[in-house]
Structures are given as structure tokens and as C-alpha cells.
Image (cartoon, rainbow, N blue to C red; front, side, top):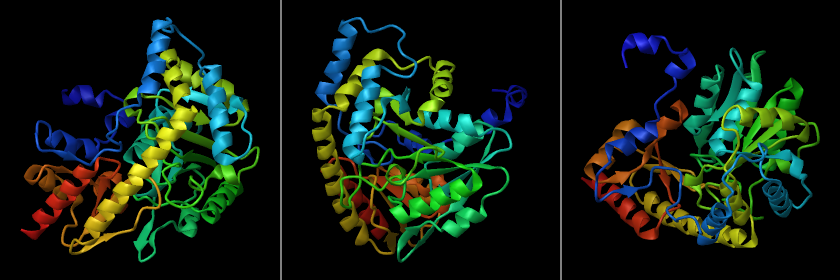
Length: 391
């Protein structure tokens, strides 16, 4: 595209950053010996019972426009799912179906932040969060977390100091991509108190909420402490729990009084999610889906153990054992440039890892490894890394 055409575009679109993860992926296309541990997905296909639900819906002719807020049956299934997970009742009217977790984030941001507004984002963080704020015309303000002997820590005083008259929201991803950090209830309470004090929204990304290695089968959540009237938008997706990354279907949980606004946002973006995809999502929320999710979490836990043990043996390795999600975020002594290191590894060994620089300046010096993968790939990938470092 010529420079004159580029300059004619809106700045937020023109300046949207390239993905530092996709750059590494593109550099490895065509390799037959690739060990792909870079992207945020497991390697299991969608379970057959979920696919069959979509197939049945297609055969039944569910190929027309449908409810903008989502099928009533799916919204009720989400309410029932949350009731099981959080052990209290949920109203189906607070759930809205979107065309992916990413669209949930975009809608949430667009509802509350625009030109001149700021959204606070603890970092390192998934880069799409800041990009969504930027595309809306706002500014994502990085609040760096600290890394030390206690692992990754969020300094609430630092978060509070970042609040300005332009601040509209705090975005929190817990469990965290890429660090595996999990906000405990005291941290969540402090963030909620800060938001209440300044009249801020919270966008709570709980996509990895079930991938938690502590007690209770799920991570601590704002659902545990929030009250009616709190300004919280929960964004989530079917992608991770039920191996549905390619389906592109997610949801927003929000106060019911925001329903018409969210419906309008869906209408003017995608005009709803395909009914047959929603039938698949209903199946995912069934008891069969619960059983599959238990398997997924057990598999990720085993993967975590494999890579933790392997990386801990590398000279100069540093990391905090992830409390949640399914990534090991680690640094290597004498390799401070994570992009250069990731490119060298994929070029010379076929091992694909995501550079920490893709997750903001606070991630520089680290690499992200996805361990929700098959055991032999994890073993071979970490072996290649160790061999490369020894040369």
C-alpha cells in the first residue's frame, strides 16, 4: 500500500501494532520438524459431541439470523454453568453471546473508552488487550508488575498512582496470559475498592479461570466479592475450556440493564453468532463438557510439571511457577532480547516460542511456552532448547 493511501487512514487503525507472536509463526511456516509451543491453544480437536450438535443444527436448517443477544437456551446454559462454578444463582439475562472472546473485549472497550480515555492494564499482558483500546481511540496505560523471589506481583499502590482524570477502566486478566499469575481475593478486593473510589469500570478477562492449580477447581474471581451495581464487565470465550479456538464464539457477562446497549453493539458488528455454533456451545456446557474440561485441566497440569522440571535445569533460567492458565513465562540469563532469541530458536531448532516483548516492555527478557500440548512435543521442545543453549 502506498504511503499516501496509508496516511489517509484513521491513525488508530494505521498504528495498530503487528503481533510479535505472529511474526515468529510466519518465520517458521513450511518447517516439517516444527514444535509449535507459541500460540495460546491446546492441540486437542473439538470433542465429537460438540461438533455433532452443530451438525444436527445445520441439518435442521438453523442457518438464519437469530437472537442478537444469543439463543435463550445458550444464555440459560451459561447461567447454569456459572451457578455450578460459583455456587450461587445467576440470571440468564446477564449473558450475551459474541463472535469470540476477542469481540467480547472489543465491545467492552468500545462501550466505555474512546478518544482521550485511558485503560489501565497490568503488564506483561496479552497484546490484543492494548490493541483493542488503541483501535477504539483510547490509550492503554501499562502498569508493570514486578518479578522477584515471590514471583509476579501487582503493586496496588502503583496501580492507584496510574489513575488520572482520563482513566475509565482497569483491565484485569486473571489467571494471566502470559505469566500464569493469579489475583487472590485480597488483590481483587483492593482493585474493586479502587474502581469504586474513582468510578472506574473493570473489564475482567477470566478466560483461564478454570485452568487453576490451587484448590477449589477455579481461580478467585470478582464474582466472589462483587455487589449489584458494581461496574464490572466479564469477558470470556469457549475457546480454551472446550478446545474451540477455531469456532470463534464467546460471551459477555454484564448487568442486565446494559442488555440493549450490548445487543446494539453486536448488531452493528456481526449481527449475531450463527445458531449452529451456539448449539455447539450449549453442548459444551453439558455434563459431557464438564468431563472434557476436567481432562483438559489434568493434561495441562501434567504439561506444567514437564516443562517446569525441564526449564528449571537450564543454566540461568528464571520463572515463577504458574498458578493458572497454561503458559510458562521464563527468562534465560545472557539472552535479554526475547525477539532475537525466539527467532534464533525457531530458525535453528524448529522450536516455536513466543517472545516476551510481544506482551509489552515488562515482558522483555522472557519467553512464553504453551504447555497445553502433547507430552512428546513438550519433552522434545525443551530438549532442543537445552541442546541449543549448550552450544
